[in-house]
Image 1: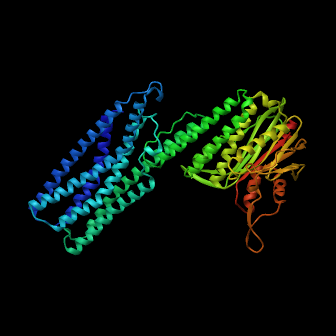
Image 2: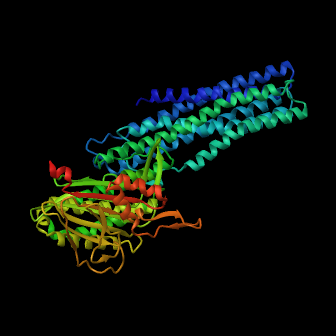
Image 3: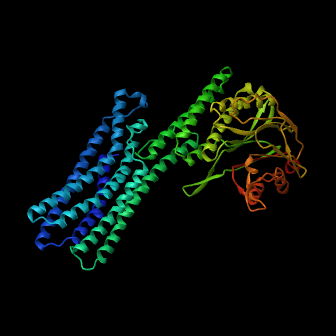
Length: 602
Protein backbone atom coordinates (compact mmCIF):
# COMPACT_ATOMS: atom_id res chain seq x y z
CA UNK A 1 0.00 0.00 0.00
CA UNK A 2 1.42 3.41 -0.98
CA UNK A 3 1.79 6.22 1.52
CA UNK A 4 0.15 8.71 -0.86
CA UNK A 5 -2.92 6.49 -1.19
CA UNK A 6 -3.39 6.23 2.58
CA UNK A 7 -2.69 9.95 3.04
CA UNK A 8 -5.35 11.07 0.57
CA UNK A 9 -7.83 8.47 1.81
CA UNK A 10 -7.43 9.67 5.39
CA UNK A 11 -7.36 13.36 4.49
CA UNK A 12 -10.46 13.28 2.30
CA UNK A 13 -12.51 11.34 4.88
CA UNK A 14 -11.36 13.30 7.94
CA UNK A 15 -11.45 16.78 6.42
CA UNK A 16 -14.74 16.05 4.66
CA UNK A 17 -16.26 15.20 8.03
CA UNK A 18 -14.78 18.30 9.68
CA UNK A 19 -16.17 20.66 7.04
CA UNK A 20 -19.50 18.84 6.82
CA UNK A 21 -20.33 18.59 10.54
CA UNK A 22 -18.26 20.59 13.08
CA UNK A 23 -17.55 23.67 10.95
CA UNK A 24 -21.21 24.26 9.88
CA UNK A 25 -22.26 23.74 13.48
CA UNK A 26 -19.69 26.23 14.76
CA UNK A 27 -20.50 28.85 12.08
CA UNK A 28 -24.27 28.63 12.51
CA UNK A 29 -23.90 28.52 16.27
CA UNK A 30 -21.78 31.69 16.29
CA UNK A 31 -24.18 33.52 13.98
CA UNK A 32 -27.35 32.91 15.98
CA UNK A 33 -25.81 33.52 19.44
CA UNK A 34 -24.02 36.81 18.72
CA UNK A 35 -25.20 40.35 18.24
CA UNK A 36 -22.43 42.46 16.70
CA UNK A 37 -21.89 45.49 14.58
CA UNK A 38 -21.19 44.78 10.89
CA UNK A 39 -17.54 45.85 11.29
CA UNK A 40 -17.14 43.50 14.22
CA UNK A 41 -18.68 40.67 12.22
CA UNK A 42 -16.20 41.27 9.38
CA UNK A 43 -13.27 41.07 11.80
CA UNK A 44 -14.69 37.97 13.45
CA UNK A 45 -15.35 36.18 10.14
CA UNK A 46 -11.90 37.16 8.81
CA UNK A 47 -10.24 35.68 11.90
CA UNK A 48 -12.29 32.48 11.57
CA UNK A 49 -11.43 32.08 7.87
CA UNK A 50 -7.73 32.73 8.37
CA UNK A 51 -7.33 30.45 11.38
CA UNK A 52 -9.60 27.69 10.01
CA UNK A 53 -7.65 27.63 6.73
CA UNK A 54 -4.27 27.81 8.44
CA UNK A 55 -5.04 25.17 11.02
CA UNK A 56 -6.60 22.89 8.39
CA UNK A 57 -3.51 23.14 6.20
CA UNK A 58 -1.24 22.70 9.21
CA UNK A 59 -3.19 19.63 10.36
CA UNK A 60 -2.95 18.11 6.88
CA UNK A 61 0.79 18.83 6.80
CA UNK A 62 1.25 17.21 10.21
CA UNK A 63 -0.63 14.13 8.93
CA UNK A 64 1.70 14.05 5.93
CA UNK A 65 4.73 14.12 8.24
CA UNK A 66 3.29 11.45 10.56
CA UNK A 67 2.52 9.05 7.71
CA UNK A 68 5.92 9.73 6.16
CA UNK A 69 7.50 8.87 9.51
CA UNK A 70 5.39 5.71 9.87
CA UNK A 71 6.14 4.43 6.35
CA UNK A 72 9.83 5.21 6.77
CA UNK A 73 9.89 2.96 9.84
CA UNK A 74 7.95 0.24 8.01
CA UNK A 75 10.36 0.30 5.07
CA UNK A 76 13.26 -0.27 7.45
CA UNK A 77 11.78 -3.65 8.40
CA UNK A 78 13.20 -6.41 6.16
CA UNK A 79 10.65 -8.62 4.43
CA UNK A 80 11.17 -12.15 5.85
CA UNK A 81 11.83 -14.58 3.02
CA UNK A 82 11.83 -17.70 5.16
CA UNK A 83 9.44 -16.78 7.96
CA UNK A 84 9.97 -14.79 11.14
CA UNK A 85 12.81 -17.11 12.13
CA UNK A 86 14.97 -15.52 9.41
CA UNK A 87 14.93 -12.16 11.26
CA UNK A 88 17.34 -11.29 14.05
CA UNK A 89 16.14 -10.52 17.57
CA UNK A 90 16.86 -6.81 17.07
CA UNK A 91 14.86 -6.77 13.81
CA UNK A 92 11.89 -8.50 15.45
CA UNK A 93 11.89 -6.07 18.40
CA UNK A 94 12.04 -3.15 15.99
CA UNK A 95 9.15 -4.57 13.94
CA UNK A 96 7.11 -4.99 17.15
CA UNK A 97 7.66 -1.32 18.05
CA UNK A 98 6.45 -0.29 14.58
CA UNK A 99 3.35 -2.48 14.87
CA UNK A 100 2.53 -0.96 18.27
CA UNK A 101 2.90 2.48 16.64
CA UNK A 102 0.19 1.51 14.11
CA UNK A 103 -2.17 0.69 17.00
CA UNK A 104 -1.51 4.13 18.49
CA UNK A 105 -1.84 6.13 15.29
CA UNK A 106 -5.68 6.57 15.44
CA UNK A 107 -5.32 8.11 18.90
CA UNK A 108 -2.74 10.58 17.52
CA UNK A 109 -5.23 11.72 14.85
CA UNK A 110 -7.97 12.08 17.48
CA UNK A 111 -5.75 14.12 19.81
CA UNK A 112 -4.50 16.33 16.98
CA UNK A 113 -8.05 17.33 15.93
CA UNK A 114 -8.82 18.33 19.53
CA UNK A 115 -5.62 20.42 19.60
CA UNK A 116 -6.60 21.94 16.24
CA UNK A 117 -9.92 23.12 17.65
CA UNK A 118 -8.17 24.53 20.71
CA UNK A 119 -5.65 26.25 18.45
CA UNK A 120 -8.51 27.86 16.54
CA UNK A 121 -11.07 28.75 19.19
CA UNK A 122 -8.69 30.29 21.76
CA UNK A 123 -6.58 32.50 19.42
CA UNK A 124 -9.65 33.72 17.50
CA UNK A 125 -11.35 34.77 20.74
CA UNK A 126 -8.24 36.46 22.14
CA UNK A 127 -7.47 38.35 18.93
CA UNK A 128 -11.08 39.45 18.65
CA UNK A 129 -10.95 40.81 22.18
CA UNK A 130 -7.71 42.60 21.37
CA UNK A 131 -8.87 44.10 18.07
CA UNK A 132 -12.45 44.91 19.06
CA UNK A 133 -13.38 44.60 22.69
CA UNK A 134 -14.02 41.97 25.30
CA UNK A 135 -17.50 40.50 24.81
CA UNK A 136 -18.81 37.93 27.32
CA UNK A 137 -21.08 36.39 24.67
CA UNK A 138 -18.03 35.65 22.46
CA UNK A 139 -16.16 34.08 25.38
CA UNK A 140 -19.14 31.92 26.32
CA UNK A 141 -19.69 30.97 22.70
CA UNK A 142 -16.04 29.90 22.36
CA UNK A 143 -16.22 27.70 25.46
CA UNK A 144 -19.48 26.03 24.44
CA UNK A 145 -18.24 25.58 20.86
CA UNK A 146 -15.23 23.60 22.03
CA UNK A 147 -17.30 21.53 24.47
CA UNK A 148 -19.78 20.43 21.78
CA UNK A 149 -17.34 20.00 18.86
CA UNK A 150 -14.23 18.41 20.43
CA UNK A 151 -15.84 15.09 21.61
CA UNK A 152 -17.60 14.29 18.30
CA UNK A 153 -14.43 15.17 16.37
CA UNK A 154 -12.30 12.97 18.67
CA UNK A 155 -14.58 9.92 18.30
CA UNK A 156 -15.04 10.20 14.54
CA UNK A 157 -11.36 10.85 13.80
CA UNK A 158 -10.38 7.86 15.93
CA UNK A 159 -12.75 5.38 14.25
CA UNK A 160 -12.09 6.61 10.70
CA UNK A 161 -8.30 6.51 11.23
CA UNK A 162 -8.50 3.04 12.78
CA UNK A 163 -10.51 1.76 9.80
CA UNK A 164 -8.06 3.20 7.25
CA UNK A 165 -4.95 2.05 9.11
CA UNK A 166 -6.14 -1.60 9.24
CA UNK A 167 -4.73 -2.21 5.76
CA UNK A 168 -1.18 -1.64 7.00
CA UNK A 169 -1.41 -4.71 9.25
CA UNK A 170 -1.55 -6.89 6.11
CA UNK A 171 1.84 -5.64 4.83
CA UNK A 172 4.35 -8.54 4.59
CA UNK A 173 6.75 -6.76 7.00
CA UNK A 174 4.04 -6.46 9.66
CA UNK A 175 1.53 -9.28 9.20
CA UNK A 176 3.40 -12.15 10.91
CA UNK A 177 4.95 -10.10 13.71
CA UNK A 178 3.41 -11.43 16.92
CA UNK A 179 2.63 -9.20 19.90
CA UNK A 180 1.59 -9.99 23.43
CA UNK A 181 -1.86 -8.94 24.62
CA UNK A 182 -0.29 -6.51 27.12
CA UNK A 183 1.60 -4.73 24.31
CA UNK A 184 -1.54 -3.48 22.55
CA UNK A 185 -3.17 -0.26 23.85
CA UNK A 186 -6.60 -0.99 25.33
CA UNK A 187 -9.71 0.87 24.18
CA UNK A 188 -12.62 -1.55 24.70
CA UNK A 189 -16.11 -1.16 23.31
CA UNK A 190 -17.64 -0.20 26.63
CA UNK A 191 -15.46 2.91 26.68
CA UNK A 192 -15.88 3.48 22.94
CA UNK A 193 -19.67 3.39 22.98
CA UNK A 194 -19.80 5.46 26.17
CA UNK A 195 -17.62 8.19 24.65
CA UNK A 196 -19.53 8.08 21.35
CA UNK A 197 -22.85 8.43 23.18
CA UNK A 198 -21.49 11.33 25.24
CA UNK A 199 -20.15 13.11 22.14
CA UNK A 200 -23.49 12.76 20.33
CA UNK A 201 -25.45 13.84 23.39
CA UNK A 202 -23.19 16.82 24.05
CA UNK A 203 -23.79 18.33 20.61
CA UNK A 204 -27.56 19.10 20.80
CA UNK A 205 -27.53 19.53 24.58
CA UNK A 206 -24.95 22.33 24.49
CA UNK A 207 -26.58 24.08 21.53
CA UNK A 208 -30.13 23.96 22.89
CA UNK A 209 -28.95 24.98 26.35
CA UNK A 210 -27.07 27.98 25.02
CA UNK A 211 -29.93 28.96 22.71
CA UNK A 212 -32.27 28.98 25.72
CA UNK A 213 -29.69 30.98 27.68
CA UNK A 214 -29.28 33.46 24.79
CA UNK A 215 -33.07 33.84 24.62
CA UNK A 216 -33.24 34.56 28.33
CA UNK A 217 -30.39 37.10 28.11
CA UNK A 218 -31.70 38.67 24.91
CA UNK A 219 -28.49 37.88 22.98
CA UNK A 220 -29.92 35.57 20.30
CA UNK A 221 -29.67 37.02 16.80
CA UNK A 222 -32.90 35.56 15.39
CA UNK A 223 -36.47 36.57 16.06
CA UNK A 224 -38.12 33.14 15.90
CA UNK A 225 -36.25 30.65 18.17
CA UNK A 226 -37.91 27.67 16.45
CA UNK A 227 -35.87 28.34 13.29
CA UNK A 228 -32.47 27.62 14.92
CA UNK A 229 -33.93 24.73 16.90
CA UNK A 230 -35.32 23.06 13.75
CA UNK A 231 -32.14 23.84 11.81
CA UNK A 232 -29.87 22.41 14.52
CA UNK A 233 -32.07 19.31 14.78
CA UNK A 234 -31.77 18.78 11.02
CA UNK A 235 -27.99 19.29 11.01
CA UNK A 236 -27.64 16.91 13.98
CA UNK A 237 -28.75 14.03 11.74
CA UNK A 238 -25.39 14.20 9.90
CA UNK A 239 -23.10 13.55 12.92
CA UNK A 240 -25.56 10.96 14.21
CA UNK A 241 -25.40 9.01 10.93
CA UNK A 242 -21.63 9.44 10.53
CA UNK A 243 -20.78 8.45 14.09
CA UNK A 244 -23.17 5.47 14.04
CA UNK A 245 -21.71 4.34 10.72
CA UNK A 246 -18.06 4.46 11.80
CA UNK A 247 -18.82 2.63 15.07
CA UNK A 248 -20.87 -0.05 13.25
CA UNK A 249 -18.16 -0.40 10.60
CA UNK A 250 -15.52 -0.89 13.29
CA UNK A 251 -17.58 -3.70 14.88
CA UNK A 252 -18.28 -5.28 11.48
CA UNK A 253 -14.60 -5.29 10.49
CA UNK A 254 -13.70 -7.05 13.74
CA UNK A 255 -16.44 -9.66 13.26
CA UNK A 256 -15.42 -10.27 9.64
CA UNK A 257 -11.82 -10.92 10.67
CA UNK A 258 -12.93 -13.40 13.33
CA UNK A 259 -15.40 -15.10 10.97
CA UNK A 260 -12.76 -15.46 8.26
CA UNK A 261 -10.41 -17.17 10.70
CA UNK A 262 -13.15 -19.47 12.00
CA UNK A 263 -14.06 -20.34 8.41
CA UNK A 264 -10.48 -21.42 7.72
CA UNK A 265 -10.40 -23.36 10.98
CA UNK A 266 -13.62 -25.19 10.07
CA UNK A 267 -11.89 -26.34 6.86
CA UNK A 268 -9.14 -27.96 8.93
CA UNK A 269 -6.58 -25.22 8.34
CA UNK A 270 -4.69 -25.06 11.65
CA UNK A 271 -2.10 -22.67 10.20
CA UNK A 272 -4.57 -19.77 10.15
CA UNK A 273 -3.41 -16.75 12.16
CA UNK A 274 -5.83 -14.13 13.52
CA UNK A 275 -4.10 -10.74 13.28
CA UNK A 276 -5.21 -8.06 15.79
CA UNK A 277 -5.84 -4.85 13.85
CA UNK A 278 -7.42 -2.62 16.47
CA UNK A 279 -7.21 -1.78 20.17
CA UNK A 280 -10.70 -3.08 20.95
CA UNK A 281 -12.15 -6.34 22.32
CA UNK A 282 -11.59 -8.09 18.98
CA UNK A 283 -7.83 -7.79 19.51
CA UNK A 284 -8.20 -9.58 22.86
CA UNK A 285 -10.43 -12.18 21.19
CA UNK A 286 -7.77 -12.70 18.50
CA UNK A 287 -5.20 -13.70 21.15
CA UNK A 288 -7.62 -16.20 22.70
CA UNK A 289 -8.52 -17.62 19.29
CA UNK A 290 -4.87 -18.00 18.32
CA UNK A 291 -4.24 -19.82 21.60
CA UNK A 292 -7.12 -22.22 20.94
CA UNK A 293 -5.93 -22.85 17.37
CA UNK A 294 -2.41 -23.48 18.64
CA UNK A 295 -3.66 -25.98 21.21
CA UNK A 296 -5.85 -27.77 18.68
CA UNK A 297 -2.94 -27.94 16.25
CA UNK A 298 -0.77 -29.43 19.00
CA UNK A 299 -3.45 -31.98 19.80
CA UNK A 300 -3.70 -32.90 16.11
CA UNK A 301 0.06 -33.44 15.93
CA UNK A 302 -0.05 -35.58 19.05
CA UNK A 303 -2.82 -37.75 17.60
CA UNK A 304 -0.88 -38.10 14.36
CA UNK A 305 2.22 -39.25 16.25
CA UNK A 306 0.16 -41.77 18.21
CA UNK A 307 -1.20 -43.15 14.95
CA UNK A 308 2.30 -43.96 13.76
CA UNK A 309 2.54 -47.08 15.93
CA UNK A 310 4.03 -45.59 19.11
CA UNK A 311 1.95 -47.83 21.34
CA UNK A 312 4.59 -47.91 24.06
CA UNK A 313 4.14 -44.14 24.55
CA UNK A 314 0.39 -44.23 25.12
CA UNK A 315 0.74 -43.47 28.82
CA UNK A 316 3.04 -40.52 28.17
CA UNK A 317 0.77 -39.19 25.42
CA UNK A 318 -2.26 -39.47 27.69
CA UNK A 319 -0.53 -37.39 30.36
CA UNK A 320 0.41 -34.74 27.81
CA UNK A 321 -3.13 -34.70 26.45
CA UNK A 322 -4.32 -34.31 30.04
CA UNK A 323 -2.23 -31.17 30.41
CA UNK A 324 -3.45 -29.83 27.07
CA UNK A 325 -7.05 -30.35 28.11
CA UNK A 326 -6.41 -28.47 31.36
CA UNK A 327 -4.98 -25.58 29.33
CA UNK A 328 -8.05 -25.56 27.09
CA UNK A 329 -10.26 -25.49 30.19
CA UNK A 330 -8.41 -22.42 31.46
CA UNK A 331 -8.78 -20.73 28.09
CA UNK A 332 -12.50 -21.49 28.14
CA UNK A 333 -12.89 -19.72 31.50
CA UNK A 334 -10.97 -16.69 30.24
CA UNK A 335 -13.09 -16.22 27.18
CA UNK A 336 -15.93 -13.69 27.22
CA UNK A 337 -18.80 -15.99 26.24
CA UNK A 338 -18.28 -16.05 22.51
CA UNK A 339 -21.08 -18.51 21.72
CA UNK A 340 -20.45 -18.52 17.99
CA UNK A 341 -16.81 -19.50 18.40
CA UNK A 342 -17.84 -22.38 20.68
CA UNK A 343 -20.45 -23.52 18.15
CA UNK A 344 -17.86 -23.54 15.36
CA UNK A 345 -15.45 -25.59 17.47
CA UNK A 346 -18.12 -28.13 18.49
CA UNK A 347 -19.56 -28.74 15.02
CA UNK A 348 -16.68 -30.87 13.62
CA UNK A 349 -16.64 -33.05 16.78
CA UNK A 350 -20.33 -34.07 16.85
CA UNK A 351 -20.34 -36.17 13.67
CA UNK A 352 -21.96 -39.27 12.18
CA UNK A 353 -19.39 -41.23 10.17
CA UNK A 354 -21.26 -44.47 9.45
CA UNK A 355 -21.22 -46.60 6.29
CA UNK A 356 -23.46 -49.67 6.61
CA UNK A 357 -25.96 -51.72 4.60
CA UNK A 358 -27.50 -53.25 7.71
CA UNK A 359 -27.99 -50.23 9.96
CA UNK A 360 -29.81 -46.93 9.88
CA UNK A 361 -28.36 -44.31 12.21
CA UNK A 362 -29.98 -40.93 12.90
CA UNK A 363 -28.92 -38.12 15.26
CA UNK A 364 -31.02 -35.35 16.78
CA UNK A 365 -29.69 -32.58 19.06
CA UNK A 366 -31.64 -29.58 20.34
CA UNK A 367 -29.59 -27.57 22.80
CA UNK A 368 -31.38 -25.34 25.31
CA UNK A 369 -29.23 -22.25 24.70
CA UNK A 370 -30.29 -20.58 21.44
CA UNK A 371 -28.57 -17.44 20.11
CA UNK A 372 -28.43 -15.38 16.94
CA UNK A 373 -25.37 -14.41 14.94
CA UNK A 374 -25.58 -12.46 11.69
CA UNK A 375 -29.34 -13.05 11.46
CA UNK A 376 -28.97 -16.82 11.84
CA UNK A 377 -29.96 -18.94 14.83
CA UNK A 378 -27.60 -21.41 16.47
CA UNK A 379 -27.66 -23.43 19.68
CA UNK A 380 -25.00 -24.68 22.08
CA UNK A 381 -25.11 -26.88 25.15
CA UNK A 382 -23.61 -29.88 26.86
CA UNK A 383 -25.18 -32.72 24.81
CA UNK A 384 -23.27 -34.44 22.03
CA UNK A 385 -23.90 -37.43 19.70
CA UNK A 386 -21.06 -39.27 17.94
CA UNK A 387 -21.15 -42.44 15.82
CA UNK A 388 -18.48 -44.20 13.73
CA UNK A 389 -17.93 -47.40 11.83
CA UNK A 390 -14.83 -49.18 13.18
CA UNK A 391 -13.23 -52.62 12.81
CA UNK A 392 -12.19 -54.76 15.80
CA UNK A 393 -10.77 -58.27 15.37
CA UNK A 394 -11.74 -58.15 11.67
CA UNK A 395 -15.39 -57.56 12.62
CA UNK A 396 -17.25 -54.40 11.66
CA UNK A 397 -18.89 -52.53 14.51
CA UNK A 398 -21.02 -49.45 14.89
CA UNK A 399 -19.54 -47.30 17.67
CA UNK A 400 -22.00 -44.86 19.23
CA UNK A 401 -21.97 -42.53 22.23
CA UNK A 402 -24.56 -40.16 23.64
CA UNK A 403 -23.04 -37.85 26.29
CA UNK A 404 -24.28 -35.03 28.51
CA UNK A 405 -21.75 -32.65 30.09
CA UNK A 406 -22.58 -31.05 33.42
CA UNK A 407 -23.79 -27.43 33.35
CA UNK A 408 -25.79 -25.17 31.08
CA UNK A 409 -24.82 -23.19 27.99
CA UNK A 410 -21.10 -22.37 28.01
CA UNK A 411 -20.19 -24.60 30.96
CA UNK A 412 -21.88 -27.62 29.38
CA UNK A 413 -20.56 -26.74 25.92
CA UNK A 414 -17.04 -26.58 27.37
CA UNK A 415 -17.41 -30.07 28.77
CA UNK A 416 -18.85 -31.36 25.47
CA UNK A 417 -15.94 -29.73 23.59
CA UNK A 418 -13.37 -31.46 25.79
CA UNK A 419 -15.22 -34.79 25.61
CA UNK A 420 -15.58 -34.57 21.82
CA UNK A 421 -11.88 -33.83 21.33
CA UNK A 422 -10.83 -36.73 23.58
CA UNK A 423 -13.31 -39.19 22.07
CA UNK A 424 -12.40 -38.31 18.48
CA UNK A 425 -8.71 -38.80 19.29
CA UNK A 426 -9.54 -42.29 20.62
CA UNK A 427 -11.57 -43.11 17.49
CA UNK A 428 -8.84 -41.92 15.14
CA UNK A 429 -6.26 -43.88 17.10
CA UNK A 430 -8.45 -47.01 16.79
CA UNK A 431 -8.95 -46.54 13.05
CA UNK A 432 -5.34 -45.86 12.15
CA UNK A 433 -3.29 -47.99 14.57
CA UNK A 434 -3.41 -51.71 13.59
CA UNK A 435 -2.64 -52.69 17.17
CA UNK A 436 -5.96 -51.39 18.42
CA UNK A 437 -7.91 -53.46 15.87
CA UNK A 438 -6.90 -56.63 17.76
CA UNK A 439 -8.78 -55.58 20.89
CA UNK A 440 -12.18 -57.17 21.53
CA UNK A 441 -15.31 -55.02 21.96
CA UNK A 442 -15.55 -55.62 25.73
CA UNK A 443 -11.92 -54.65 26.35
CA UNK A 444 -12.19 -51.67 23.97
CA UNK A 445 -15.15 -50.24 25.92
CA UNK A 446 -13.54 -50.89 29.31
CA UNK A 447 -10.11 -49.44 28.53
CA UNK A 448 -11.33 -46.36 26.72
CA UNK A 449 -13.99 -45.44 29.30
CA UNK A 450 -11.34 -45.86 32.00
CA UNK A 451 -8.93 -43.65 30.02
CA UNK A 452 -11.56 -40.91 29.67
CA UNK A 453 -12.28 -41.20 33.41
CA UNK A 454 -8.61 -40.52 34.16
CA UNK A 455 -8.50 -37.51 31.85
CA UNK A 456 -11.61 -35.89 33.32
CA UNK A 457 -10.42 -36.54 36.87
CA UNK A 458 -7.75 -33.92 36.15
CA UNK A 459 -10.49 -31.27 36.46
CA UNK A 460 -10.96 -32.12 40.15
CA UNK A 461 -14.66 -32.83 39.87
CA UNK A 462 -15.55 -29.52 38.19
CA UNK A 463 -16.32 -31.09 34.79
CA UNK A 464 -18.54 -34.20 34.81
CA UNK A 465 -20.00 -36.10 31.85
CA UNK A 466 -22.68 -38.83 31.85
CA UNK A 467 -22.89 -41.14 28.83
CA UNK A 468 -24.11 -44.29 27.18
CA UNK A 469 -21.50 -45.87 24.89
CA UNK A 470 -21.80 -49.04 22.89
CA UNK A 471 -20.54 -51.25 20.07
CA UNK A 472 -23.02 -53.04 17.75
CA UNK A 473 -21.65 -55.84 15.56
CA UNK A 474 -23.26 -55.41 12.15
CA UNK A 475 -23.21 -59.04 10.96
CA UNK A 476 -24.64 -60.65 14.10
CA UNK A 477 -26.61 -57.86 15.81
CA UNK A 478 -24.69 -58.42 19.06
CA UNK A 479 -24.76 -55.27 21.21
CA UNK A 480 -22.10 -54.41 23.81
CA UNK A 481 -22.73 -51.31 25.91
CA UNK A 482 -22.16 -49.60 29.24
CA UNK A 483 -23.75 -46.73 31.12
CA UNK A 484 -22.30 -43.94 33.29
CA UNK A 485 -25.19 -42.35 35.22
CA UNK A 486 -27.11 -41.86 31.96
CA UNK A 487 -30.73 -42.71 31.06
CA UNK A 488 -31.09 -46.33 29.90
CA UNK A 489 -31.32 -47.34 26.24
CA UNK A 490 -34.85 -47.82 24.89
CA UNK A 491 -35.53 -50.99 22.82
CA UNK A 492 -38.44 -50.66 20.37
CA UNK A 493 -39.39 -54.16 19.21
CA UNK A 494 -42.63 -55.23 17.55
CA UNK A 495 -44.36 -51.89 18.32
CA UNK A 496 -43.49 -52.19 22.03
CA UNK A 497 -40.92 -50.03 23.86
CA UNK A 498 -38.99 -51.06 26.96
CA UNK A 499 -35.84 -49.99 28.80
CA UNK A 500 -32.65 -51.94 28.17
CA UNK A 501 -30.88 -51.68 31.53
CA UNK A 502 -27.16 -52.17 32.05
CA UNK A 503 -26.04 -54.50 34.85
CA UNK A 504 -23.97 -51.71 36.42
CA UNK A 505 -24.27 -47.91 36.08
CA UNK A 506 -20.81 -46.41 36.49
CA UNK A 507 -20.14 -42.95 37.90
CA UNK A 508 -19.94 -39.93 35.60
CA UNK A 509 -16.66 -39.19 33.85
CA UNK A 510 -14.59 -36.97 36.12
CA UNK A 511 -16.03 -38.33 39.41
CA UNK A 512 -13.17 -38.58 41.89
CA UNK A 513 -12.61 -42.06 43.28
CA UNK A 514 -14.82 -43.87 40.75
CA UNK A 515 -14.62 -47.67 40.71
CA UNK A 516 -12.75 -49.37 37.81
CA UNK A 517 -14.73 -50.51 34.78
CA UNK A 518 -15.38 -54.29 34.99
CA UNK A 519 -18.71 -55.34 33.45
CA UNK A 520 -20.02 -54.80 29.93
CA UNK A 521 -23.68 -55.47 29.15
CA UNK A 522 -24.43 -57.70 26.15
CA UNK A 523 -27.71 -57.97 24.26
CA UNK A 524 -28.77 -59.73 21.06
CA UNK A 525 -30.81 -57.71 18.57
CA UNK A 526 -33.23 -59.21 16.11
CA UNK A 527 -34.11 -57.89 12.63
CA UNK A 528 -36.31 -54.80 12.83
CA UNK A 529 -35.21 -53.79 16.34
CA UNK A 530 -34.77 -50.07 17.00
CA UNK A 531 -32.58 -48.59 19.73
CA UNK A 532 -33.21 -45.07 21.07
CA UNK A 533 -30.35 -43.57 23.12
CA UNK A 534 -30.92 -40.18 24.72
CA UNK A 535 -29.93 -37.78 27.48
CA UNK A 536 -32.07 -36.84 30.50
CA UNK A 537 -33.37 -33.72 28.72
CA UNK A 538 -36.05 -35.87 27.07
CA UNK A 539 -37.54 -36.62 30.51
CA UNK A 540 -36.99 -33.29 32.29
CA UNK A 541 -40.17 -31.47 31.32
CA UNK A 542 -41.76 -28.68 33.33
CA UNK A 543 -45.57 -28.83 33.31
CA UNK A 544 -48.54 -27.72 35.38
CA UNK A 545 -49.96 -30.18 37.89
CA UNK A 546 -53.61 -30.48 38.86
CA UNK A 547 -53.30 -27.57 41.33
CA UNK A 548 -51.81 -25.25 38.75
CA UNK A 549 -48.24 -25.41 40.10
CA UNK A 550 -45.20 -26.07 37.95
CA UNK A 551 -43.49 -29.41 38.52
CA UNK A 552 -40.87 -31.55 36.79
CA UNK A 553 -42.08 -34.74 35.13
CA UNK A 554 -41.50 -37.88 37.24
CA UNK A 555 -43.25 -40.44 35.00
CA UNK A 556 -40.55 -42.87 33.76
CA UNK A 557 -43.03 -44.48 31.35
CA UNK A 558 -43.78 -41.22 29.50
CA UNK A 559 -40.87 -41.54 27.09
CA UNK A 560 -41.68 -45.18 26.32
CA UNK A 561 -45.22 -44.13 25.36
CA UNK A 562 -43.81 -41.42 23.09
CA UNK A 563 -41.57 -43.95 21.33
CA UNK A 564 -44.50 -46.28 20.75
CA UNK A 565 -46.86 -43.55 19.53
CA UNK A 566 -44.27 -42.17 17.08
CA UNK A 567 -42.87 -45.57 16.03
CA UNK A 568 -39.39 -44.43 17.04
CA UNK A 569 -39.24 -41.38 14.73
CA UNK A 570 -36.78 -38.88 16.29
CA UNK A 571 -38.30 -35.72 14.86
CA UNK A 572 -41.78 -36.77 15.91
CA UNK A 573 -40.52 -37.68 19.40
CA UNK A 574 -38.89 -34.24 19.76
CA UNK A 575 -42.04 -32.45 18.65
CA UNK A 576 -44.16 -34.51 21.06
CA UNK A 577 -41.82 -33.69 23.97
CA UNK A 578 -42.08 -29.95 23.27
CA UNK A 579 -45.87 -30.16 23.08
CA UNK A 580 -46.18 -31.83 26.50
CA UNK A 581 -44.46 -29.11 28.55
CA UNK A 582 -41.58 -26.67 28.85
CA UNK A 583 -38.18 -28.11 27.93
CA UNK A 584 -35.63 -27.11 30.60
CA UNK A 585 -32.56 -29.02 29.40
CA UNK A 586 -30.70 -30.04 26.25
CA UNK A 587 -32.24 -32.88 24.25
CA UNK A 588 -30.09 -35.35 22.29
CA UNK A 589 -31.21 -38.63 20.72
CA UNK A 590 -29.62 -41.39 18.62
CA UNK A 591 -31.80 -43.85 16.68
CA UNK A 592 -30.27 -47.14 15.47
CA UNK A 593 -32.36 -49.52 13.38
CA UNK A 594 -30.97 -53.04 12.83
CA UNK A 595 -31.96 -54.62 9.52
CA UNK A 596 -35.00 -52.34 8.88
CA UNK A 597 -37.80 -53.87 6.81
CA UNK A 598 -37.15 -51.57 3.88
CA UNK A 599 -33.59 -52.83 3.64
CA UNK A 600 -34.42 -56.45 4.33
CA UNK A 601 -37.02 -56.65 1.60
CA UNK A 602 -34.63 -55.08 -0.86
